[in-house]
Image (cartoon, rainbow, N blue to C red; front, side):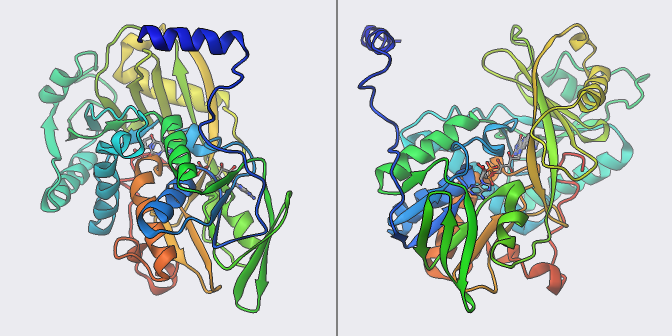
Amino acid sequence: MSRYSIVSLARNALNYHKGWEEAWRSPEPQPEYDVVIIGAGGHGLATAYYLAKEQGVTNVAVLEKGWLGGGNTGRNTTIIRSNYLQPESIALYELARSLYETLSQELNFNIMFSPRGLLNLCLTEHEVRVFRRIVEANRIAGLDVRFLDAAQVKQKVPIINNSRAARYPLLGALYQPRGGTARHDAVAWGYARAADALGVDIIQNCAVTGIERRRDAVSAVETVKGKIKTKKVAVVAAGHTSVVMDMAGVRMPIESVALQAFVSEPVKPMLDVVVMAGAVHGYVSQSDKGELVIGGGADAYNNYSQRGSPPALEHTAAALLELFPCFSRMRMLRQWGGIVDMSPDRSPIMSETDVKGLYVNCGWGTGGFKAIPGSGFVFADTIANERPHPIAEPFGINRFAAGRIVDESTAAAVAH
Ligand code: FAD
Ligand code: PYC
């Protein structure tokens, strides 16, 4: 940190941050906007940014019932990868992953992208077959994704238990060298600041309570800060999607459940790749601060809880202890949950709807952080041009009725 930054920090601390430049404005809502986005998570904010930057649509409001980034975007475990199975998904997630590579420069905000490499462990013969198939699908699409045997995995992760006597012996792993992590809050803050600078109004503490329709088209949204007229509404509300879409009379094929995570006390560097182990429901990476960031499978029942629960902690810790016996005396610091939006095929919905001017972006379930830049880019294009972007097209809401599902229940890689 430079001397100037230290002096500036001290001055701001001593005068209670008076005069500290705001990263974004806190505007009151205007009576009307060209586009209203409901939800200031990563996907809503990225959509607003690309609407303004790429599509020239700047008369946009993002309405957030709490604080921006306070939903799943600020609660996830920040894993980024594009190693999905279906070609449609690979195109979408790889667009997002490649945009992450230069997102700090794009937004002029350090999002701490760390392509440290990612392993999806194979602990059963079935997983070996599935992940070999995914490796081939990824390689056909031109991705750098490889299959490693158990010895190669042990070389990358010296602390892993590769005993043949383990309940689930290590058999190998899918490896994506440019997978990794990024700072989740920074992604939200970076998009928010950049969208604000382009003229987008981000209005926090502004819950949407109703969506007004005139015949078959949207005409306004009702909020706790009053009515706002608009001809285009984009619902980007993750676990609250069904509730918000119900305001417009649209039923969604979405189930809401909590996904939980927790972090340990900080320790010296011991793990420099992301490790996921679907068979036992656990995954782990080490943050720059030294904390182990740990998560498991989604709750087994529908709920809207953002808290952690002891059984989830116990189940996940037990799973990971077999793989990493050296974690056994580690103390855990925090646990929390986020409300994720599960679609039937575990793929997202980025779509127009039967209501003119009503768009929806949801269904990211346990895995939407990695998709934020790509989703925002193609969804903004879809809204501005009133037809699906080619990458968004397979993820339309009508795919369920048409039987064109994009099944990613395995490559979603987190147990549901
Ligand atoms: P959110 O960030 O939840 O934003 C939606 C916003 O809508 C919220 O801020 C909410 O307050 C707002 N809202 C809702 N209703 C209203 C209303 N009526 N009016 C106004 N605003 C409203 N994904 C990965 O890719 N990698 C991971 O490692 C990963 N780990 C995860 C770990 C956990 C514990 C959790 C919970 C999720 C994880 N995910 C991960 C999934 C990822 O976090 C989500 O898919 C992603 O953040 C969704 O972003 P979003 O913008 O759609 O939703
Ligand atoms: O989608 O890769 C993922 C993920 C990891 C942890 C939670 N989701």
